[in-house]
Image 1: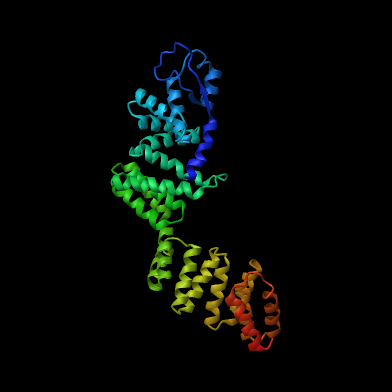
Image 2: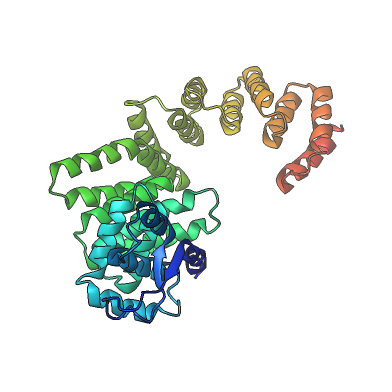
Length: 365
């Protein structure tokens, strides 16, 4: 697994010590004992490790070693030691990880990973491991981004499959899907968390999340309806959003819905509102111009296309539509100039290229 390869590098964060002869801890005598290097440095600086061994740090080091490399040569012996000295290994890994989470995220993650490898059925340790795992995907230096998210999703989904009332797993799935921009899934998991939560403070936290993503979820649902050609349902969703908040993207998709129904005046109004609210992207100018053109407001359509081209001067679709509008207005010289320019682009679609040649032949330019 790619994650196994990623975590293996953390073995370098461990140092190994040998017990002095006559030390009282059984099972440890013949083993190289791993200690997290930062803990070793602290112990040496404070003098804590000068004359005695700190067993908890050794046990943490063994868990970290297993979390970093589950095929490490001494893991079998480390597992025996952990089982001998700890009543509940995953309780130890979770409590130790939570204690250091804020100051040393990687150490906490390794402790939880070690606990998860030894007992993936412990729901709290597994939840905490997944909770720390997926944000690693957003670190700049990480190459295995999808693997971190995919593994966290797998762990959490297995948790709710075997523990269907485990509210915090649903909540974390909501957080992941929110970050992925999949708001309908996020809303579904947050709602599941809310139904399974009895603590009022926790409920309010989930409600806050739902309030944050609700408009995005409604827009995602509207896009689903648009994709299915169900424009009336999309309009209901989008007008509902806009009755509460003036959002540029909601106005834009409302314009798209009206345009597909042939209601050009309504679409013109929606696109204009979208631009006023900051829908400053090429599709907004292009679709706005199309609605104006279809509503026989050709000069206004040309003005909007030109505004779009000021911001996106090399957009093929905007230029192509400008050519069509100029041809309809009889501006053949300008259309020819734009055709010649557009034919120099390297990224033209086959459709645009074919249509340009048709226009050249049709208008003899």
